[in-house]
Structures are given as C-alpha cells and as structure tokens.
Length: 203
Image (cartoon, rainbow, N blue to C red; front, top):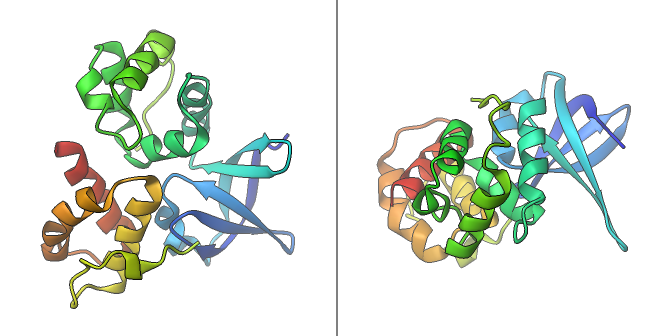
C-alpha cells in the first residue's frame, strides 16, 4: 500500500495526472488535475490511495494527508464511490463540507454532482462528529460534445469546462455558468476551474 509518491507531473488531463517517479509514469486520479499544471518543473508529493478491484488497480492522489483522510471517510459512506468523492473534494471549501455535515445541511451537500437528498442524509449520518479532527486544506474529454463553448474561449477555459464535465456536472449546469466564466479573467485552467466550482455551488 502506498502512502505517498514524490516525482514530476508529466501530463495533466481532466480526469487524471501522470506522475513520473524514477522513470515510471503512474496514472493518478485527482480531484482537480489542473491544480498541478504548473508543477511540471518541480517535484511534487502526492499522497496516494490505492484501490484494488477484481480487474483493476487505481491510484488516487491528494494534495496533503488531510485531503486523503477526508476521501477515505467519504468513500466509507454508502452511496459514495471514488468518483463522487473526488467531485466533492474538487471544491476546495473543505471547511464548508465539514461544517455542512456538522450542521445537518442537506441542501449544501446536494449541490455536489451525484449527491441526492438520500445520499446527503447518509453522509451526515455516517460522518457527523467524525470530521472534527480534519483541517481544511486550502482522458481528455471530447470537447466537441460541449457545443456551447464560446468561439473566443481560451484553451484554459475549454480545459476547465471539460474538467467540470469529468467531475460529473451536467452540460446544462456547465452551460449556465459558461458566459460568466468567459468574462472571468484568468491565466490558468486551475483558476477557471475554481471559479466554475464556486459558481456551481452558488446555484
């Protein structure tokens, strides 16, 4: 079982990053791949969760140990799989998530993709009182399917929209915030993605 890996990010996609360690490239699924887009020239440490199933082994990566622990707690909830857990963690307001669980805030939790009222209630039931010790850390999708992308959209904006779709948000939800994102001034995919997640959580 891996605890963490230290290496270089050699590829970033909406679904995963490739972390090269000692000449071997590991495909690692992370909550926000573009968070690591500017780390290509520097060594990074990814905390790793290894999921072993009958016919596959998947590596999930996390920015720090607390994020990994939060992921482990989330996938222990009935109805929450790894993809849903990553989508929840992609919104960096982990303090808001912890507070929502403590406050029985079902409405907040249902804003995450794939989380309905029943699952939100299950999250609260399973995790209430169990998150207090956590600190809050701050495959390319066919873009032709996102046919509402503005013609003048930057590559960073296009990548962020693809990443939102990869996280499980619907085209209707993404289309609704695309005009605002197109007006948002940002230089990186990560900045666009953070703003997109912020807008989606407000709805």
